[in-house]
Length: 189
Image 1 (cartoon, rainbow, N blue to C red):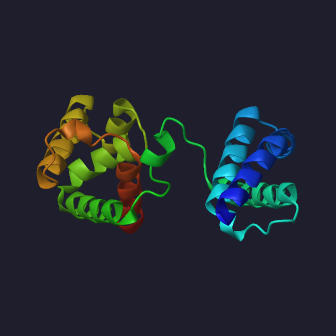
Image 2 (cartoon, one colour):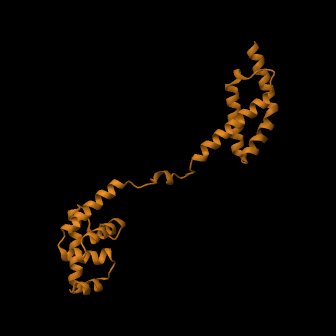
Image 3 (cartoon, rainbow, N blue to C red):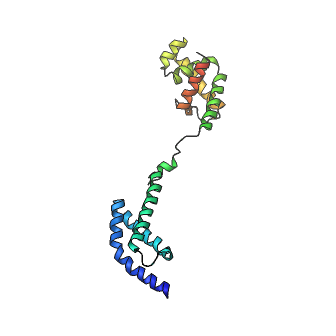
């Protein structure tokens, strides 16, 4: 019977405290929806912990303490979270794994070294240095058609050595430029 009287007392007092709790929550969050959620969570926590409430003490102060502590806990939690409503940020890794790139770079450098020197030179001039076919042909002392053929053969051979399906996959991306730059620095043209 005693527990019933206490729960009836708390129910009567809760309805009187609701407007004050809402105002306090709105003051903390500055968001009506979040403040309603905070008040609801406070009431649920209070109801679950009703046996800890001391009859004769200030119920409103007890509820305000629960609300404030809930707000601070939520605030600390949200401070570490990144808002990502569409999930795009979570799907994209922050740091790309290095081991795959390193292994691919090593394979590419090894394959470049195994190319005939004429093909390697032609590929370095066009793909790494960005020279036009005409300029690269003049530097190598060959016809433009010959240089284009060497670049084409070098790409096809690299694609075969690296087990790629298409020689066009060896475009001027970061990995290709890095491998060519490294090869150039260790074996000057």
